[in-house]
Each structure stands twice: as C-alpha cells, then as structure tokens.
Length: 192
Image (cartoon, rainbow, N blue to C red):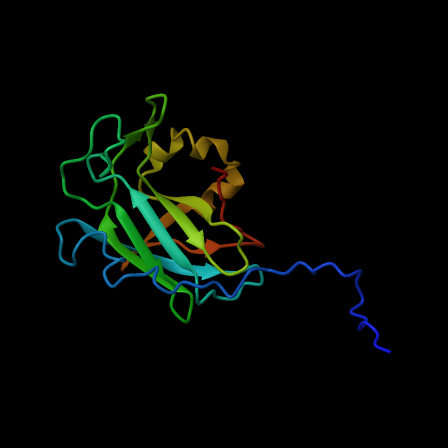
C-alpha cells in the first residue's frame, strides 16, 4: 500500500516568489552608455538597488528612457516628430555583485505631457529583479531643477514626503539615485 506524502497543504501548488531573476541575453556591452564616453555634456547617473530587507540586489536590471537635452525623443511616435539629434535615449544596465548600476547619458530637457503641460527634466526607469512578477517603473528627477520640479504634473501627484525618493542628488561623480524596492524610504513606483 502506498500513501501520499503529507506536505501540510491540500494539494495545491504553494505560491512562491519568482526567481532567481534570469537576465541572460538582456544586457549588452554598451547598454549603459546612452552616449559615448567623452561626449560633450555627458553625465553619469548611478546608484544601488536594495531589496525590502535593505540588502543589495546583485542581479537586477535597470532600463532607462529619456528625452534628449532639447526635449525630443528618438522615437517616431513623438507627436512633435522624432528627434534628429541622433541621441539614442535608451539605456540598460545590470547591477553588479554589490547592487551598483550606472549609465552615462545627457541630462534630458523639458518635455510636454499629453495635455501639453511642461514636465521637469526626468528619466523614466524600469527595474526588473528577482521576486518581481512584472517590472516596476519610476522616474529620476534632478535636485538642481527645483523650479521645474515644483511645477511638474507627475511629481505633484506624489505625496510631498515621498518625493525625495524620485530625486537624484548631485555627487562629485554625477548624480546618485538609489532604488529601494520595499521598506523604509521605498522608491515611489508608478502604475502604467
């Protein structure tokens, strides 16, 4: 006589977190260089990704999408017409063993929203990481754009006490922007 092992549940597959996150083939060698090293006006944006316990996430993937310094997008769907600057606008960088990531880019310009209102210079960011069923999406704003930030229609929807989680701060190496997936000081993420 055989008996079924008792796993302590009613036969349903128990829920699990997703992972480890598999990123094979997603990064590419110059993905972190939205512009080439030495490009005039190039800035480095960097930080760490932390999980809900405060531990560094060594296998996340950061994707960025942004306008060029004139506020144009390198995309045919831009209603103003695609930017002719040759600026790629897209970056992709995996985190390293200590959760660090960085991209080299140009500071974006002001872009209109769907209603034509000006948006402060910002970079759209997707984060893919273990434990996430879907990417999470956030924005990077710049601390030295206080006037533009004060009138940004998206930033205005975020409670004032949480806005700092969306602000990159100037650093001697560029701009620092840490991403906290959960917990205290969790980064604000947006529903799409």
